Length: 456
Image (cartoon, rainbow, N blue to C red; front, top):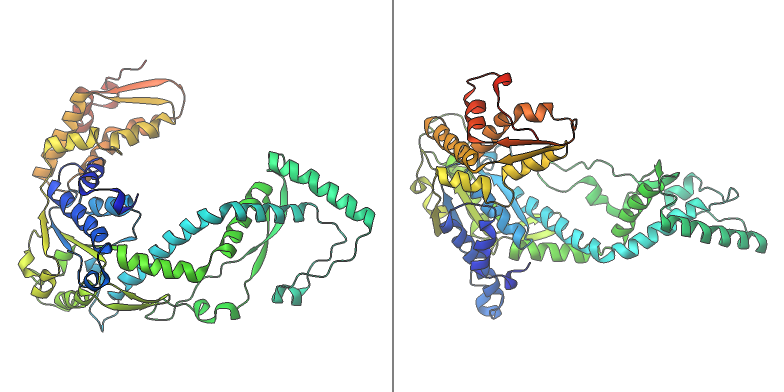
């Protein structure tokens, strides 16, 4: 789905399928995404002057900050990367530099573009791969294998001339095998193929450029012989043929454009790089990291192995709990680059129940799907969901508040014995999880033999 096909209201409705509540944050990202499309429709002289309205999300952990950004990018198939602000160090120290944010984002964009391009050539690539497999299947013993020099230069060996009778037999045999290959009769037959061997890349210190990238075509591609089934050979060779059909230069140009105009960078734990409450010590300057992030967010040109990449129109979404520090503890220049600020609310018991029952990928549905593989049909009653939600809320209030992640911990405890004992025998088992079962299992008041289960 593209941005022009979806309105901000539709974006919020799509996010509602995966994230409960947090309407302000959803509206903010929806408007920011739509503004990108609006900007693209403007004349060039004004378009370049409009910068994205970066967003700062403030809220406790586990309330959906990362999920909102990730789902937003997935909704429009935009390059997306999540980074932890605490992973970076000030220039001059050993560690990750902030330029790696852009280098990682362009790698994501390259993968997106190449995946889309593969879809356009996969039919032709599959045809070429089947032809190569047929060549192997009908290869005559008289055919000479390439010698060491021919392998190095990638030159096909000159084959001996075939008589008319041999050519006729060869054509008949190839047609016969082609029919068998198309029908799948040869899928499990084992053959030997030569595939390109991907050597581990050795990056130059402080860059994202490897020795292989520098030498490029000067380094011959190594090949290795593998014994695989015909079905696996078709898959491997189809991948090779796809790479041959893709225009690498066009893919790189499109990926850079996609990253510059549609890239989304999510910077998490930004509150952890303030100096507030940290005291003095040998740690790398947190304000120094902020100063290094600032040019990337403001708009800079970062050199990558694919060429220069501009960050002027990338959308940056920062997030932090700000329990100890305040937003005002960030350096003023960085604060100014995040003009849109939204507060995400802690989750209530009603929110927890909605997460368990209303979201598209609810953990209850995940558990039901997993155990259904072993013939166990799980059913959660409404009062069971209310009890799990109440316990999750209570534990978050009394212990550490980890938001919706608390549900994963509770669900693992709740279904621990079921998951361990389920093995597909008996095949048809129905287990009803009600409030009583939840109280017993999570409170740990009785032993396993006292659990009440409804088995049909």
